Image 1 (cartoon, rainbow, N blue to C red):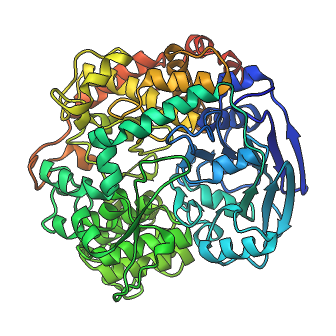
Image 2 (cartoon, rainbow, N blue to C red):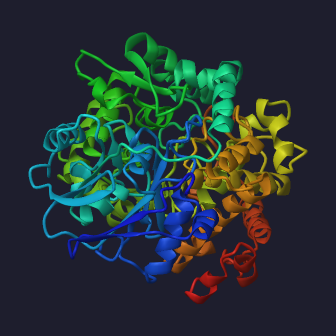
Length: 631
């Protein structure tokens, strides 16, 4: 009997309108588990170099993992991965909710989609069955209406739907995938890949729970977590206020709240867009994901001018800052509306907000005029122009057609030095964390194989001397914490091990808010949960090597797409002084940054061009990758 997995992977060829089921060996699952690592395996094994991200040869992977559905808090996530239309390299987005556990209940660990349908379709996966259904009546619909129509067609209100809206259909390069109107596989443009395949949605429903080896051991850990999570300061904050509940104010006071396209680290109207203001004026209830007591999500509603619909959840910190301080906007109701529109159209809120902030800086510097923007006064602080711009991007109308390409491609088309205003790495826009104040974020943004990524490793402030997470560091071999602002050899080592942990969680389908350094569930408990779920004799060493294997697999996919050290770079702005806030005048040092890259590559067993060596691949059990031109 299989434990933790169904042992079945669904394969769908949309061009030929065929599907089949594969049943990998147990050794495959123990090597790649699921999530990110599983997706990378198939992308490397089956796709050639130089895949067109929006062509039929791109492989789209939806992957669960053995912990998913076990009831372990946060073990409800899944990866959507492909070659990214935004970066041209490896792309992925993770989401929680209920879709991943339901896929396993439906009888599958992953869904691999290739080819392109002639007409719009959706997949209906239920109780071991796979159907390719016509989606003509769904095309052009937002996520809410798509969900409702599929529920009606399959006559089941409990169906779980991961779908795209008009932004995905129109191939906006940072379109995302949205489940239940509020759980988002946000980054990398996975929604555009779905749109390129004429795939509107994947609906799943199952009635057979996955089997786990040691259910009593899992239940003990689940009960322990439920009994203690409110005693942990981070878990309590997330439960009481969500990510919007503390980050805006905290980061503004620290001088690292991204403001006006990363010119400043402080926003004069931060109090207007913070968690306290949100909860006083727009909060409806706390939402969450399957099996998780933290319930960190916020639901927003307003009957004011913007008419915010609670069906689409509410803004996270990233959304509040991207549409707020980064665009100089202090109207929180407009920010909530921007969030709703992004979830309706299926737009990544980070890339959308950063791309609009880029356009605002271009406008204020005369590189764009009202003739280019369809009459929109795209200036910092103009909330209406910001919201109007979201509609245009999703529909690719007017200036929206330009901005739908992402900030880097848009800058190259605008010319006149616009590239210096594009806050991106490898083509993907920066998240709302300032690398001049968080040394590990400078590394995370530059070195992530997916492009700028704030979830490539835990953030510095929890792990500097005297901070909350310091006591957790010895478990992964770090005895001396480093200051947040530092970019030293010790910080590179700390980031490297942290990167392994968070990439591990993307392979395990485990939420970064419930486990790992700085969170309640420690790494040895994660290993115990894996052992209880699967029956394998798993220990901390094995899962940390799985995290390292995941990081290297992602790099191999991107290297085969042409990535090298030349792509591990940051915008010039971060090597210039911050203009405001507590860290005014702070900047990164180029020589120190380049030395950090050298050291990072050495630590990973990569050459100085950022290419994994043959020996490192063999050491990680990836010797087969040496034969597929990843050097």
